[in-house]
Image (cartoon, rainbow, N blue to C red; front, side):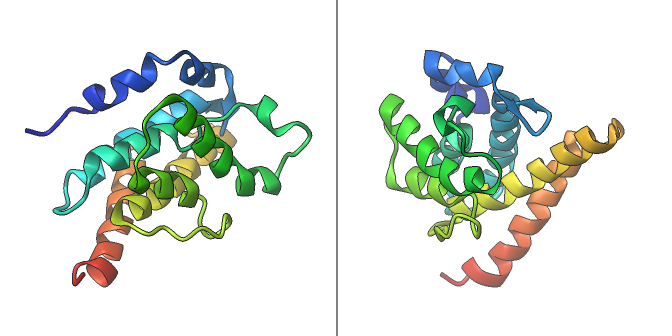
Length: 172
């Protein structure tokens, strides 16, 4: 039986430290909203494929940006993109049980900027979906274009993941 997104997300959403993301700005929305949008799309994409641990992929997506702006001090801009996966992983490990698939997906979600290579299908799914969702959020915020919907982010994510899967991982 497939677990629902809400069942997977529940323990994270009940965590006090994780709830602080609702006060953090990220791509013109809160970091919590961004993380959940990424996670919902990762969940939708992951359950479509055989041999993908959709639970680990979704869990990693929920905590892929588990950090506060205060944790950076004066570091802003590009360096924040490079180091935040390590901070997110440390925070996730401090609050939750994180398996190896989830750890690599969190560390690698900023590839190639972070220089950590995604080692699993789950990590690649998170990496691509996060980029699609972040692009969508940037466009909506930058151009205030409300006709764009979550369906665009989901559709783009699915197309990219499907193409990548067919080209590289189907034969493994």
